Figure 1 (cartoon, helix red, strand yellow):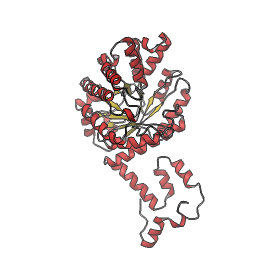
Figure 2 (cartoon, one colour; figure 1 turned 90 degrees about the horizontal axis):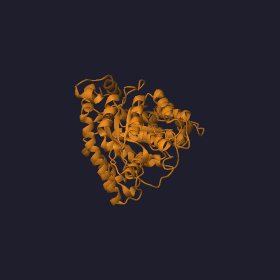
Figure 3 (cartoon, rainbow, N blue to C red; figure 1 turned 60 degrees about the horizontal axis):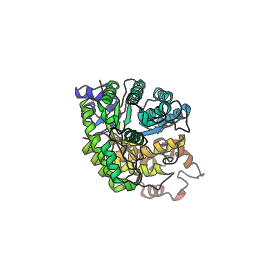
Length: 431
């Protein structure tokens, strides 16, 4: 049985108990919101070494790291190294987006090595195999597509991005809208090409019940993908995007009735003043389903620094109710991320998630900040390093210049906190 089915029957599963312990909330709350579909616990029955993680209502904001090869670069060793870095710096999940090399072998190795939930986008492998077999993605058959989905399910994939809302109606909206950047979702583009060439409806939409059967069998969380997400600020919150979101809301309801866990993916590129509205739209149209956002990126001009634009947007989105942030690395729009990009992307998204957790009233987040502030007042540099997201970097930067006293090299003997403590007679605060 799936986590959703167990929760609906009032059963508190071992996974729910673990999530409750991790989050510091009651088991009953986890069971209630899982039953309502407002929390998902991606946990494929075949992912044997998984430490389950909850995503959704009243939980801390989670961070996903995308890894995987491209058609030009990457191999199993490089992606396992990226996985290790993502785990080390605090990602809550990873997605294997491999499109080159031994795709199945890389995925299986990542799942075997990962204690984090692992996600995939099955249309990538299905499309690539169709090119190898038939010369083009548009020649892919339905059985071939669903065979890939089932194989990935058997391998232990915990959540899958499936672009079920890219329908013929959504394509019609897209054509009429006349976007600046058209479609930037790779999975969405694969499907649109297939649909237009074959003059058929999206098979993930047309045969959604078949998809639900596979997901229910292995307890896969369906991450309903945003194939129509805006790829530029100019295209934000347009008719094609909202058309797809309306469809996803209907599919969330069908999935819940079938006992399948679902979350919904969101944009994309959004200006600051539209982020909260997009979160509210998703929560309303999709009946409170956990919201998984890419960024959002709040400007188009930050090439090489899009981890910053995404962290800005992610903090606002999560503070407004988004539940799951997909990291963006400095390599976004430019190249395949390397290990250092993965580290930077995870840390940037964790900052955004933590900033939102403070606003959302998460006690652990506020207490973490309080401890850091105490360490700063006490000029306890080692404790500051231990409390940071990247202790090695903190130590490196702090020790960059030699100092003669307990303060840092920025202020030296003119440190504000040291001076005020001396003249006001305020004693050192105990952590």
